[in-house]
Image (cartoon, rainbow, N blue to C red; front, side, top):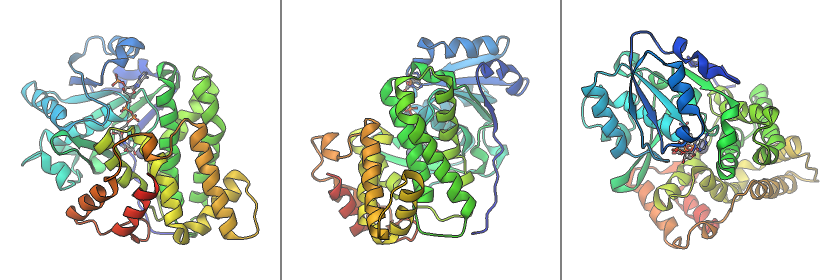
Length: 388
Ligand code: NZQ
Ligand code: ZN
């Protein structure tokens, strides 16, 4: 097993009715910025719950954080935090609102041009230099409620870039599984597939000796397969909802990444498809992952076979046979979860995509991706073209 440090300071507050605890979780004597998205919180009652729980607190509201949050929008919130002397931010929403708040939190005291936070991938490590924040999660998918990473889009250049650092964990996150009842089916499907792919990025690499991490990863995958199709149809079933939500957090709160190699190339390529075509994040992963497993078959085949045997109970005479069946089974699951796994099924305008992505990675100085750094730009091209 590789050496690791496990640090996760987020107070994770899970279950029905937990929003009532907000007043105790928000630090005393703070002036709060309540940040939200396009308004779903007004329709499903979450806004009312939050306001009721925070009666008596001084709150300024900032709405309009878009899916795939925009740098340009977030900078408006940064100005408000500065001019209004805000001392705490509450993100109420899905991954986009939470990620947006992480950016705002870091940008307020950032000395220099805030766009460099994204362009230079600044890591925030000093808690005294960020605005503390908590979250009320409304869309289980990204794990952003219990991790310190974020993804922000620069509208002007159509770039989707990451930021993070140990100072950007939420202080607390309220995670009430009943919030999923108001989600459109499409978003629940997205949540399951995003969480599933998070596990795969950290699990589907090459054989190593971290046995527990493999078993936890396989347990999350099996649970997502078990509850995924059912929770889309019955989001008010609390057993299904609570297991889905907990899987989504566990998939990306850092635990299964400790001591193991990880890949993340599906995400890196997928982000470009969102930046270019505004395809939902999870749907980009379902487009790229199958081609990536095929192009990187020699590197990943042992782990693919293990995944096939343990997660899908696949049998076969050779590693290759089991690995191939495992890829096919994964695609079948993606389809069952409403994903369209070809780029051409998601946009008409796809023909120059591989060139565009390869050029962009090259301009950024990225030479190779993946757990073995062997997904070269030529491989990236092959993966993207195979996904057309
Ligand atoms: O904006 P509102 O009106 O709230 O509506 C949202 C949005 O339209 C709606 N929604 C959220 N909760 C709802 C609801 N509608 C009804 N009822 C509810 N309870 O759903 C839509 C999508 O929301 P969004 O936050 O964009 O989705 P998601 O949580 O999937 O977040 C996606 C973003 O997170 C990033 C993605 O790249 C993308 O930008 N990611 C962040 C990660 C992280 N921080 O660790 C990791 C991920 O891999 C991912 O990259
Ligand atoms: Zn993701």
